[in-house]
Image (cartoon, rainbow, N blue to C red; front, side, top):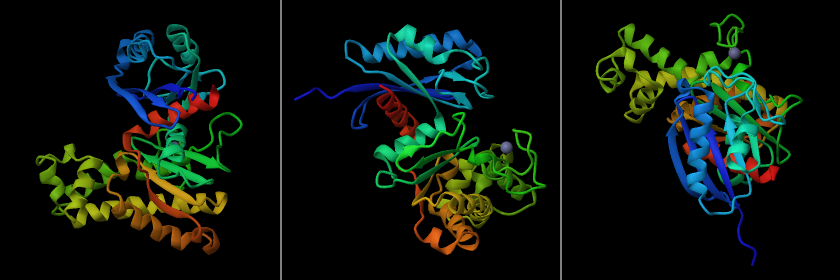
Length: 317
Ligand SMILES: [Zn+2]
């Protein structure tokens, strides 16, 4: 019997980077988390990733390396075009540099696309041919699997669901537009909404969970308070879920998916967030389209991007 192929994967983040070795069935064989420490500069960060990968690979025979990174990026040239969280990486030949250091082919993909590929390969999206994955974190990323394949668009930039306009006169987003989904419903937006309620004098467990300091309230605090049925925290998720639901209704009407999955730190609360999302979708999408569109949680957690990056290497090799 032929030996199972092994792929290396990198999930490059602004704070931490996950490295892994995966089987062709998507099993994580080895996993290592290292701080990215962007302030050390591009060369040092790439060296550190290459060292980590070489150590992990050892004498094993590895087919290729997949890298998931914050975009927009040019997957064909293997270059990150613009990434506010990875200062110094813009327009550097990341895939080429890493390939030289590791002597293996390297394939680059947007991290939200990688997460969608991971969920589609071995996660909650295994059975779905038409699938949308929304990652609610510092920003809101999206990956579109259409007809069983990742949809990249004409410049590898499709799926920027976080920058759909939801409120024409809403707050200004990091992208410069007003009222994007991201500025209304990302994890920091949830935390800001929670802090606002505390400042208005609402009594909530969130303040205790944050050690009495409103500034320490995060999206995680909101999720934890929801687990204790804190009504103010549930209200925060209802408001965020409403915006996410408006965006999801638009996506369902345009793309007719069979599954929409929510992952990332901002979606940790699970059903407390999914219920208001479904309610809004019910109000705003075509009955025939929403009837076949299930809305649920991602199941791979923090490993979705890593697993998807291995899939990128597998499809590219
Ligand atoms: Zn935006």
